[in-house]
Length: 210
Image (cartoon, rainbow, N blue to C red):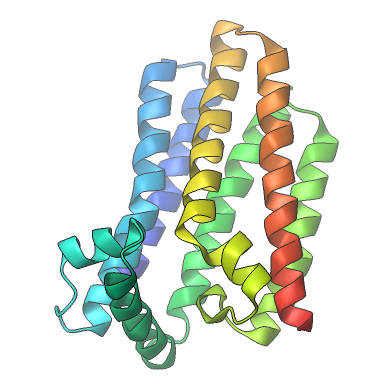
């Protein structure tokens, strides 16, 4: 098994553990730490994938600079990602599947816990199901060609932004459920995250139809 795929699998299993910890009302400090680790592993599996595709030519420093917006490093990484999509065609789809599994598990847990209304879960599932279907027919997100999709979906700023919002939202919801933190803050964070998700979904659909 490729290191990138193994990392994705470990990330999903880690979130399954997090789900049980949340429902068991274990320490939010532990839960939030594990959520942070799971989200950081999303970047780690990307590094492993690119590093394998480049036979070690892309080191950690180059990959980190590409994530931070260095154009030269980003161009190098994107070049090997294109090579990766041909050599390991299931790799990018496995990465997406891992992302979806992690997100769905957390949405379902907080719905079951009664922290968020069930219609939010429906919105997320419907959005991902249809957008992923269109993008699977078009190609992976690394191949975005339209300016709108590149800015809203593929840019490091937007990618980083949604990951920060996801971390804050899912972490705070654990505090709402376990330590009875104010619910309204959680609702605001959920509204921001869902809006973010829908906007990026619109960018993907635009790319699919462009």
